[in-house]
Image (cartoon, rainbow, N blue to C red; front, top):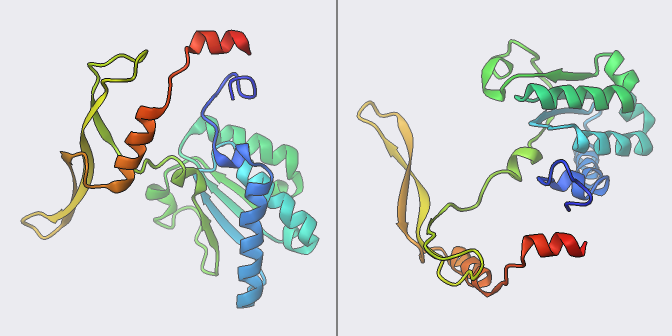
Length: 212
């Protein structure tokens, strides 16, 4: 991974498995459209990052049906200004005609801000909402560690608490979310992960890099 992505080692499935990751999602959408008799393709992607997933999906549509590709509408909602710029650059390079015809729209804002309030674009017809770059950044669990052990031995790491989210209501009847902690052990998936983690050796990072 370090050799393939020296500047950024945080790589999403869209980049790791491109273009097939995007092809799979695009194929699912086409099947849904055919089964439901939907003629116009509209996609809203939340958190597209650099646009890798959309690029793969649009390539699939182009190869599957030029009419579907030429008439599609693809809306990006990206909160990061830097990523929004990179996404726009990629779309201009790879799908210039769609961009020039305003069929590709990129909004640098939060999905919870103006966009959802109808101040940007309002889509009344059927559309697909994609949030893959959000989902793959959501952790399954949060563990609290007592790191009195050492990274070299990996023997004495003691994960004491796991985080869970409780849903409750305040005196006004409004639902609230609260993070609470409980001893590790109630979640079998966490227990299995920790057992695997303890059994894995930790290679010397410097030595590993030199061998490469």
